[in-house]
Image 1 (tube, rainbow, N blue to C red):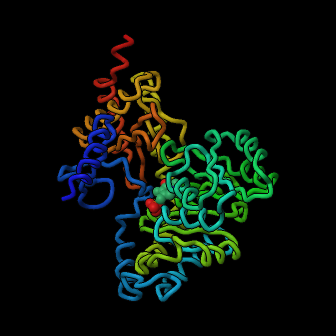
Image 2: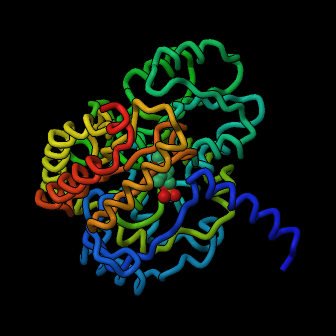
Image 3: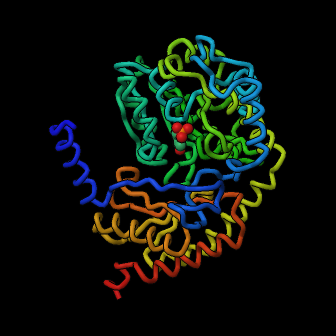
Length: 409
Ligand SMILES: *Cc1c(COP(=O)(O)O)cnc(C)c1O
Protein backbone atom coordinates (compact mmCIF):
# COMPACT_ATOMS: atom_id res chain seq x y z
CA UNK A 1 0.00 0.00 0.00
CA UNK A 2 1.24 3.48 -0.81
CA UNK A 3 0.59 5.76 2.17
CA UNK A 4 0.68 8.98 0.17
CA UNK A 5 -1.84 7.60 -2.33
CA UNK A 6 -4.14 6.33 0.43
CA UNK A 7 -4.05 9.64 2.30
CA UNK A 8 -4.74 11.70 -0.80
CA UNK A 9 -7.71 9.57 -1.83
CA UNK A 10 -9.16 9.10 1.66
CA UNK A 11 -9.43 12.86 2.15
CA UNK A 12 -11.40 13.27 -1.01
CA UNK A 13 -13.70 10.39 -0.17
CA UNK A 14 -14.39 11.85 3.26
CA UNK A 15 -15.28 15.17 1.71
CA UNK A 16 -17.66 13.45 -0.71
CA UNK A 17 -19.45 11.83 2.25
CA UNK A 18 -19.71 15.11 4.15
CA UNK A 19 -21.39 16.70 1.17
CA UNK A 20 -23.89 13.84 0.93
CA UNK A 21 -22.59 13.07 -2.53
CA UNK A 22 -21.11 9.67 -1.90
CA UNK A 23 -22.26 7.20 -4.52
CA UNK A 24 -22.82 3.52 -3.93
CA UNK A 25 -23.49 0.56 -6.12
CA UNK A 26 -26.21 -1.97 -5.41
CA UNK A 27 -26.33 -5.53 -6.57
CA UNK A 28 -29.39 -6.51 -8.55
CA UNK A 29 -30.56 -9.98 -9.38
CA UNK A 30 -32.82 -10.96 -12.19
CA UNK A 31 -33.96 -8.76 -15.03
CA UNK A 32 -36.58 -6.12 -15.61
CA UNK A 33 -38.53 -3.89 -13.26
CA UNK A 34 -39.31 -6.65 -10.74
CA UNK A 35 -35.84 -7.17 -9.45
CA UNK A 36 -33.95 -7.31 -6.21
CA UNK A 37 -31.54 -4.87 -4.70
CA UNK A 38 -28.91 -6.31 -2.40
CA UNK A 39 -31.16 -9.41 -2.09
CA UNK A 40 -34.35 -7.46 -1.33
CA UNK A 41 -37.34 -7.58 -3.67
CA UNK A 42 -37.86 -4.28 -5.42
CA UNK A 43 -40.05 -2.67 -8.00
CA UNK A 44 -37.61 -0.53 -9.98
CA UNK A 45 -38.32 2.91 -11.43
CA UNK A 46 -34.80 3.89 -12.30
CA UNK A 47 -33.60 2.04 -15.38
CA UNK A 48 -33.41 3.31 -18.95
CA UNK A 49 -34.86 0.07 -20.30
CA UNK A 50 -37.89 2.03 -21.51
CA UNK A 51 -39.45 -0.68 -23.67
CA UNK A 52 -38.69 -3.53 -21.29
CA UNK A 53 -36.45 -5.23 -23.84
CA UNK A 54 -33.34 -5.84 -21.73
CA UNK A 55 -34.91 -8.98 -20.29
CA UNK A 56 -36.80 -10.08 -23.41
CA UNK A 57 -36.18 -13.79 -24.09
CA UNK A 58 -36.15 -13.16 -27.83
CA UNK A 59 -33.11 -10.92 -27.42
CA UNK A 60 -31.42 -13.52 -25.25
CA UNK A 61 -32.02 -16.12 -27.96
CA UNK A 62 -30.57 -13.83 -30.66
CA UNK A 63 -27.61 -13.05 -28.47
CA UNK A 64 -26.85 -16.76 -28.10
CA UNK A 65 -27.31 -17.34 -31.80
CA UNK A 66 -25.10 -14.34 -32.60
CA UNK A 67 -22.40 -15.62 -30.28
CA UNK A 68 -22.43 -19.03 -31.99
CA UNK A 69 -22.43 -17.61 -35.50
CA UNK A 70 -20.16 -14.57 -35.15
CA UNK A 71 -18.40 -14.85 -31.80
CA UNK A 72 -18.95 -13.39 -28.38
CA UNK A 73 -16.09 -10.97 -28.77
CA UNK A 74 -15.01 -9.07 -31.85
CA UNK A 75 -11.40 -10.06 -31.21
CA UNK A 76 -9.84 -6.91 -32.65
CA UNK A 77 -10.66 -3.34 -33.57
CA UNK A 78 -12.97 -2.66 -36.52
CA UNK A 79 -10.04 -1.55 -38.66
CA UNK A 80 -7.92 -4.61 -38.02
CA UNK A 81 -10.08 -7.74 -38.27
CA UNK A 82 -12.87 -7.17 -35.74
CA UNK A 83 -15.50 -5.88 -38.18
CA UNK A 84 -17.85 -8.68 -39.06
CA UNK A 85 -21.05 -9.45 -40.88
CA UNK A 86 -23.23 -8.88 -37.81
CA UNK A 87 -21.81 -5.34 -37.52
CA UNK A 88 -22.34 -4.65 -41.22
CA UNK A 89 -25.94 -5.78 -41.07
CA UNK A 90 -26.69 -3.74 -37.97
CA UNK A 91 -25.06 -0.63 -39.43
CA UNK A 92 -27.14 -0.96 -42.61
CA UNK A 93 -30.29 -1.45 -40.57
CA UNK A 94 -29.56 1.55 -38.33
CA UNK A 95 -28.92 3.73 -41.38
CA UNK A 96 -32.26 2.72 -42.81
CA UNK A 97 -34.02 3.15 -39.46
CA UNK A 98 -32.71 6.67 -38.94
CA UNK A 99 -33.07 7.61 -42.61
CA UNK A 100 -29.39 8.49 -42.90
CA UNK A 101 -26.90 7.47 -45.57
CA UNK A 102 -24.81 5.49 -43.17
CA UNK A 103 -24.36 4.49 -39.55
CA UNK A 104 -21.25 3.53 -37.60
CA UNK A 105 -21.19 1.39 -34.46
CA UNK A 106 -19.32 2.45 -31.32
CA UNK A 107 -18.72 0.43 -28.16
CA UNK A 108 -20.79 2.79 -26.00
CA UNK A 109 -22.58 6.10 -26.12
CA UNK A 110 -19.89 7.67 -24.02
CA UNK A 111 -17.31 6.62 -26.54
CA UNK A 112 -19.42 7.69 -29.53
CA UNK A 113 -19.64 11.19 -28.13
CA UNK A 114 -15.92 11.37 -27.47
CA UNK A 115 -15.37 9.94 -30.93
CA UNK A 116 -17.54 12.34 -32.88
CA UNK A 117 -16.54 15.60 -31.26
CA UNK A 118 -12.84 14.83 -31.15
CA UNK A 119 -12.88 13.86 -34.83
CA UNK A 120 -14.75 16.97 -35.94
CA UNK A 121 -13.23 19.73 -33.84
CA UNK A 122 -9.77 20.85 -32.82
CA UNK A 123 -8.07 23.76 -31.10
CA UNK A 124 -9.63 27.10 -32.01
CA UNK A 125 -12.99 25.51 -32.90
CA UNK A 126 -16.06 25.82 -30.68
CA UNK A 127 -18.64 23.37 -29.38
CA UNK A 128 -21.77 25.17 -28.21
CA UNK A 129 -23.70 23.00 -25.75
CA UNK A 130 -27.10 23.14 -24.17
CA UNK A 131 -26.35 23.66 -20.49
CA UNK A 132 -27.96 20.33 -19.53
CA UNK A 133 -26.11 18.16 -22.03
CA UNK A 134 -24.85 14.74 -21.01
CA UNK A 135 -21.38 14.62 -19.44
CA UNK A 136 -19.94 12.56 -22.30
CA UNK A 137 -20.59 15.42 -24.73
CA UNK A 138 -18.65 17.82 -22.53
CA UNK A 139 -15.83 15.30 -22.19
CA UNK A 140 -15.73 14.89 -25.99
CA UNK A 141 -15.17 18.63 -26.29
CA UNK A 142 -12.34 18.47 -23.79
CA UNK A 143 -10.74 15.60 -25.68
CA UNK A 144 -10.98 17.62 -28.90
CA UNK A 145 -9.22 20.56 -27.21
CA UNK A 146 -12.00 22.77 -28.57
CA UNK A 147 -13.55 25.74 -26.82
CA UNK A 148 -16.54 24.71 -24.70
CA UNK A 149 -19.41 27.19 -24.63
CA UNK A 150 -22.90 26.70 -23.27
CA UNK A 151 -26.27 28.25 -23.94
CA UNK A 152 -29.11 28.48 -21.44
CA UNK A 153 -31.08 25.24 -21.38
CA UNK A 154 -33.54 25.00 -24.30
CA UNK A 155 -33.12 28.73 -25.03
CA UNK A 156 -32.77 28.92 -28.80
CA UNK A 157 -32.38 32.69 -28.74
CA UNK A 158 -29.40 32.43 -26.43
CA UNK A 159 -27.99 29.80 -28.78
CA UNK A 160 -28.48 32.17 -31.71
CA UNK A 161 -26.80 35.10 -29.94
CA UNK A 162 -23.79 33.03 -29.01
CA UNK A 163 -23.45 31.53 -32.47
CA UNK A 164 -23.40 35.03 -33.93
CA UNK A 165 -20.49 35.94 -31.66
CA UNK A 166 -18.13 33.17 -32.82
CA UNK A 167 -15.56 33.52 -35.59
CA UNK A 168 -17.34 32.15 -38.70
CA UNK A 169 -14.00 31.11 -40.15
CA UNK A 170 -13.69 28.46 -37.43
CA UNK A 171 -15.71 25.30 -37.04
CA UNK A 172 -18.76 25.66 -34.82
CA UNK A 173 -20.69 22.63 -33.61
CA UNK A 174 -24.00 22.98 -31.79
CA UNK A 175 -24.53 19.99 -29.52
CA UNK A 176 -27.71 18.93 -27.77
CA UNK A 177 -29.40 15.96 -26.17
CA UNK A 178 -32.65 15.05 -27.95
CA UNK A 179 -34.30 14.14 -24.64
CA UNK A 180 -32.50 15.56 -21.58
CA UNK A 181 -31.51 12.67 -19.41
CA UNK A 182 -32.14 14.20 -15.99
CA UNK A 183 -35.11 16.42 -16.86
CA UNK A 184 -37.00 14.44 -19.49
CA UNK A 185 -37.80 17.44 -21.67
CA UNK A 186 -36.77 17.67 -25.33
CA UNK A 187 -34.70 20.03 -27.47
CA UNK A 188 -36.44 22.07 -30.17
CA UNK A 189 -34.71 20.42 -33.09
CA UNK A 190 -36.45 22.43 -35.83
CA UNK A 191 -35.34 25.74 -34.29
CA UNK A 192 -31.79 24.50 -33.73
CA UNK A 193 -31.61 23.21 -37.31
CA UNK A 194 -32.71 26.59 -38.65
CA UNK A 195 -30.15 28.42 -36.57
CA UNK A 196 -27.33 26.16 -37.55
CA UNK A 197 -28.19 26.68 -41.19
CA UNK A 198 -28.34 30.42 -40.73
CA UNK A 199 -24.90 30.55 -39.08
CA UNK A 200 -23.41 27.76 -41.17
CA UNK A 201 -22.75 25.83 -37.97
CA UNK A 202 -23.07 22.05 -37.57
CA UNK A 203 -25.69 20.30 -35.47
CA UNK A 204 -25.14 17.16 -33.40
CA UNK A 205 -28.04 15.50 -31.56
CA UNK A 206 -27.56 12.80 -28.94
CA UNK A 207 -30.90 11.02 -28.85
CA UNK A 208 -29.98 8.33 -26.32
CA UNK A 209 -33.33 8.63 -24.53
CA UNK A 210 -35.53 9.34 -27.55
CA UNK A 211 -34.73 6.50 -29.92
CA UNK A 212 -37.12 3.59 -29.64
CA UNK A 213 -39.45 5.61 -27.43
CA UNK A 214 -40.56 8.81 -29.16
CA UNK A 215 -42.36 9.11 -32.49
CA UNK A 216 -45.07 6.83 -33.86
CA UNK A 217 -42.46 4.39 -35.13
CA UNK A 218 -40.00 4.91 -32.30
CA UNK A 219 -37.53 6.76 -34.48
CA UNK A 220 -36.89 9.30 -31.79
CA UNK A 221 -37.15 13.00 -31.07
CA UNK A 222 -36.71 13.90 -34.73
CA UNK A 223 -39.70 11.79 -35.75
CA UNK A 224 -41.79 13.03 -32.80
CA UNK A 225 -41.14 16.64 -33.86
CA UNK A 226 -42.00 15.99 -37.49
CA UNK A 227 -38.57 16.69 -39.00
CA UNK A 228 -37.46 14.85 -42.13
CA UNK A 229 -34.93 12.09 -41.63
CA UNK A 230 -32.03 13.88 -43.30
CA UNK A 231 -32.48 17.02 -41.20
CA UNK A 232 -30.12 16.07 -38.38
CA UNK A 233 -26.61 15.97 -39.88
CA UNK A 234 -25.00 14.19 -36.91
CA UNK A 235 -27.18 11.82 -34.88
CA UNK A 236 -25.92 9.73 -31.97
CA UNK A 237 -27.99 6.90 -30.56
CA UNK A 238 -27.32 4.30 -27.91
CA UNK A 239 -28.26 0.63 -27.90
CA UNK A 240 -28.24 0.21 -24.10
CA UNK A 241 -31.42 2.13 -23.31
CA UNK A 242 -34.71 1.46 -25.12
CA UNK A 243 -33.07 -1.10 -27.41
CA UNK A 244 -32.12 -3.21 -24.42
CA UNK A 245 -28.60 -4.28 -25.50
CA UNK A 246 -25.36 -2.34 -25.33
CA UNK A 247 -23.30 -0.11 -27.59
CA UNK A 248 -24.02 2.95 -29.67
CA UNK A 249 -23.99 4.36 -33.17
CA UNK A 250 -23.55 7.55 -35.11
CA UNK A 251 -25.73 8.16 -38.18
CA UNK A 252 -25.18 10.71 -40.90
CA UNK A 253 -23.81 11.19 -44.39
CA UNK A 254 -21.31 8.94 -46.14
CA UNK A 255 -18.69 11.68 -45.72
CA UNK A 256 -19.32 12.00 -41.99
CA UNK A 257 -19.04 8.26 -41.39
CA UNK A 258 -15.90 7.90 -43.51
CA UNK A 259 -14.35 10.81 -41.60
CA UNK A 260 -15.05 9.09 -38.30
CA UNK A 261 -13.52 5.85 -39.54
CA UNK A 262 -10.37 7.76 -40.51
CA UNK A 263 -10.04 10.30 -37.72
CA UNK A 264 -11.97 9.20 -34.63
CA UNK A 265 -9.45 7.83 -32.16
CA UNK A 266 -12.13 6.42 -29.79
CA UNK A 267 -13.37 4.48 -32.82
CA UNK A 268 -10.02 3.34 -34.15
CA UNK A 269 -8.23 2.34 -30.96
CA UNK A 270 -10.73 0.03 -29.34
CA UNK A 271 -12.02 -3.50 -29.76
CA UNK A 272 -15.14 -3.76 -31.89
CA UNK A 273 -18.54 -4.07 -30.27
CA UNK A 274 -19.43 -7.69 -29.48
CA UNK A 275 -20.82 -9.17 -32.72
CA UNK A 276 -23.30 -11.20 -30.68
CA UNK A 277 -24.69 -7.96 -29.28
CA UNK A 278 -24.90 -6.48 -32.76
CA UNK A 279 -26.90 -9.52 -33.83
CA UNK A 280 -29.24 -9.26 -30.82
CA UNK A 281 -29.79 -5.57 -31.55
CA UNK A 282 -31.27 -6.50 -34.94
CA UNK A 283 -33.97 -8.34 -32.99
CA UNK A 284 -34.51 -5.24 -30.82
CA UNK A 285 -35.11 -3.18 -33.93
CA UNK A 286 -37.63 -5.75 -35.18
CA UNK A 287 -39.51 -5.47 -31.90
CA UNK A 288 -39.35 -1.66 -31.87
CA UNK A 289 -40.92 -1.62 -35.33
CA UNK A 290 -43.43 -4.43 -34.95
CA UNK A 291 -44.70 -3.81 -31.44
CA UNK A 292 -45.89 -0.20 -31.30
CA UNK A 293 -48.21 -1.32 -28.47
CA UNK A 294 -45.20 -1.08 -26.16
CA UNK A 295 -44.97 2.64 -26.84
CA UNK A 296 -48.73 3.04 -26.50
CA UNK A 297 -48.70 1.31 -23.10
CA UNK A 298 -45.75 3.41 -21.97
CA UNK A 299 -47.55 6.59 -23.08
CA UNK A 300 -50.57 5.57 -20.98
CA UNK A 301 -48.36 5.01 -17.93
CA UNK A 302 -46.70 8.40 -18.41
CA UNK A 303 -50.03 10.20 -18.74
CA UNK A 304 -51.37 8.52 -15.60
CA UNK A 305 -48.24 9.32 -13.59
CA UNK A 306 -48.23 12.96 -14.69
CA UNK A 307 -51.86 13.43 -13.78
CA UNK A 308 -51.53 11.91 -10.32
CA UNK A 309 -48.07 13.22 -9.44
CA UNK A 310 -49.19 16.84 -9.81
CA UNK A 311 -50.46 16.63 -6.21
CA UNK A 312 -46.92 15.99 -4.95
CA UNK A 313 -46.11 19.63 -5.60
CA UNK A 314 -47.86 20.65 -2.36
CA UNK A 315 -45.61 18.23 -0.48
CA UNK A 316 -42.37 19.72 -1.78
CA UNK A 317 -41.80 17.35 -4.69
CA UNK A 318 -41.97 19.27 -7.93
CA UNK A 319 -42.80 17.26 -11.07
CA UNK A 320 -41.02 18.55 -14.17
CA UNK A 321 -42.78 19.37 -17.45
CA UNK A 322 -41.75 16.15 -19.17
CA UNK A 323 -43.76 14.01 -21.57
CA UNK A 324 -41.15 11.28 -21.81
CA UNK A 325 -40.59 8.22 -19.59
CA UNK A 326 -38.17 10.35 -17.53
CA UNK A 327 -40.38 11.93 -14.84
CA UNK A 328 -38.14 13.63 -12.27
CA UNK A 329 -39.41 15.04 -8.99
CA UNK A 330 -37.26 17.94 -7.78
CA UNK A 331 -36.89 18.33 -4.03
CA UNK A 332 -37.73 21.47 -2.17
CA UNK A 333 -37.70 23.75 -5.16
CA UNK A 334 -38.61 26.55 -2.74
CA UNK A 335 -35.93 25.78 -0.21
CA UNK A 336 -32.55 27.46 -0.64
CA UNK A 337 -30.59 25.07 1.52
CA UNK A 338 -28.77 23.08 -1.14
CA UNK A 339 -27.01 20.58 1.09
CA UNK A 340 -30.34 19.91 2.75
CA UNK A 341 -31.93 19.14 -0.61
CA UNK A 342 -29.17 16.70 -1.43
CA UNK A 343 -29.73 14.93 1.85
CA UNK A 344 -33.50 15.02 1.53
CA UNK A 345 -33.22 13.36 -1.88
CA UNK A 346 -31.22 10.55 -0.32
CA UNK A 347 -33.60 10.23 2.63
CA UNK A 348 -36.58 9.98 0.30
CA UNK A 349 -34.92 7.40 -1.89
CA UNK A 350 -34.17 5.39 1.21
CA UNK A 351 -37.69 5.68 2.57
CA UNK A 352 -39.02 4.50 -0.80
CA UNK A 353 -36.60 1.62 -0.70
CA UNK A 354 -38.07 0.53 2.62
CA UNK A 355 -41.39 0.31 0.81
CA UNK A 356 -39.86 -1.83 -1.91
CA UNK A 357 -39.66 0.97 -4.48
CA UNK A 358 -36.33 1.63 -6.15
CA UNK A 359 -35.97 5.09 -7.51
CA UNK A 360 -32.63 6.85 -7.56
CA UNK A 361 -31.72 10.13 -5.95
CA UNK A 362 -29.76 12.29 -8.39
CA UNK A 363 -27.55 14.92 -6.84
CA UNK A 364 -25.01 17.46 -8.03
CA UNK A 365 -22.76 17.42 -9.99
CA UNK A 366 -25.01 15.25 -12.21
CA UNK A 367 -27.66 17.99 -11.88
CA UNK A 368 -27.16 21.70 -11.02
CA UNK A 369 -26.66 22.54 -7.33
CA UNK A 370 -29.97 23.02 -5.53
CA UNK A 371 -31.92 20.75 -7.86
CA UNK A 372 -31.42 17.30 -6.33
CA UNK A 373 -34.20 15.05 -7.46
CA UNK A 374 -35.78 11.64 -7.56
CA UNK A 375 -35.39 10.50 -11.13
CA UNK A 376 -38.44 8.35 -11.79
CA UNK A 377 -38.34 6.45 -15.05
CA UNK A 378 -41.22 4.45 -16.45
CA UNK A 379 -40.98 1.41 -18.66
CA UNK A 380 -43.33 -0.57 -20.87
CA UNK A 381 -42.54 -3.44 -18.51
CA UNK A 382 -44.51 -1.67 -15.74
CA UNK A 383 -48.18 -2.27 -15.24
CA UNK A 384 -50.64 0.45 -14.32
CA UNK A 385 -50.87 -1.06 -10.83
CA UNK A 386 -47.09 -0.67 -10.46
CA UNK A 387 -47.38 3.04 -11.14
CA UNK A 388 -50.17 3.27 -8.56
CA UNK A 389 -47.93 1.56 -6.05
CA UNK A 390 -45.18 4.06 -6.82
CA UNK A 391 -47.54 7.02 -6.42
CA UNK A 392 -48.90 5.74 -3.13
CA UNK A 393 -45.36 5.33 -1.78
CA UNK A 394 -44.32 8.77 -3.02
CA UNK A 395 -47.24 10.48 -1.32
CA UNK A 396 -46.67 8.61 1.93
CA UNK A 397 -42.95 9.35 1.99
CA UNK A 398 -43.33 12.99 0.98
CA UNK A 399 -45.93 13.57 3.71
CA UNK A 400 -43.60 12.14 6.28
CA UNK A 401 -40.30 13.62 5.16
CA UNK A 402 -40.74 16.99 3.52
CA UNK A 403 -38.92 19.23 6.05
CA UNK A 404 -39.79 22.49 4.34
CA UNK A 405 -43.47 21.64 4.66
CA UNK A 406 -43.32 21.55 8.47
CA UNK A 407 -41.21 24.69 8.55
CA UNK A 408 -43.74 26.69 6.57
CA UNK A 409 -46.88 25.43 8.31
C1 LIG B 1 -26.57 7.12 -21.41
C2 LIG B 1 -26.16 8.27 -22.26
C3 LIG B 1 -24.95 8.26 -22.96
C4 LIG B 1 -23.94 7.18 -22.76
O1 LIG B 1 -24.31 6.02 -23.40
P1 LIG B 1 -23.68 4.63 -22.94
O2 LIG B 1 -23.94 3.73 -24.05
O3 LIG B 1 -24.37 4.28 -21.68
O4 LIG B 1 -22.20 4.89 -22.72
C5 LIG B 1 -24.69 9.30 -23.81
N1 LIG B 1 -25.54 10.32 -23.95
C6 LIG B 1 -26.71 10.39 -23.26
C7 LIG B 1 -27.61 11.56 -23.45
C8 LIG B 1 -27.03 9.37 -22.38
O5 LIG B 1 -28.14 9.44 -21.68
